[in-house]
Length: 338
Image 1 (cartoon, rainbow, N blue to C red):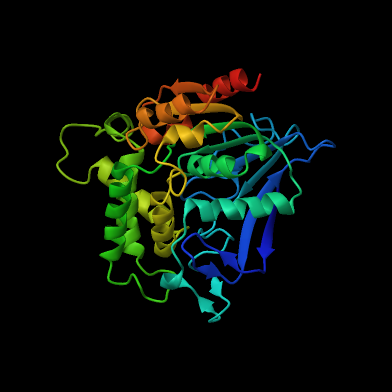
Image 2: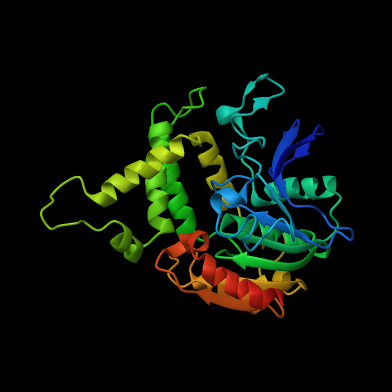
């Protein structure tokens, strides 16, 4: 594994019309690019992840795993607006020589994809053998394929959609309201809004999992308890855990970016007009218990992308199933990539 930072010293124009004077994008590679450059696997990460998929997807990436660096040249870039080495709210604004904090501009999925493609060009990769992304990572990959179809041979769009739904936006807005309710949010500090972000994470977790998942993982050991429940402790623990590695400004910006996802914007009002142009070998994967990105959203993708395969995996863990159901995912990938 090797980690790098690509630096673009030219103004980076955003979809909003604003621009960043310069942009840095952290990325991680595993393995070696073969002679004909035909073994590239590009993983687009989800909301709060980083550029090291062996850390957040350990059942799939690494030596002896499905995506083995002995076979593939694996690339994952940290997304614009994040806090793991890529330009985001805690980065230094060249114009002020101070961190952006709340002055960081709103970004979109298309802006994020523009950054990913800069890294691809920097690495001189003309063809990606297999691109895959789940959730917000799937939103990026879909937008990227629409813009740069000739760069991909095979893609997996997992637990994602053509545009973020009113349901998803409502969850994100609720999380931002929790952050904004923290009176420290807006202060010029990396800890600003920390308590609010912990509450936001608790709201988010409810959408990532579901009733069955909580009943399975957080049951009470007896019927005698009337306070300090396991589910309560779990929510607090997850908020504290995120607070050690993330910040409220980044959380706010990336949730806004997810809301921006809409492949129809400035293209067409008809999904078929956009998706029917995709000629890449495509698998669309959904999770049967996913309440945040329900199967109806993946069916729209599969119905409108010519020749695509639609696969459903069974999981009790809702949207988070893509992070946990390694064995099922390996089986469907074997069938797809044959």
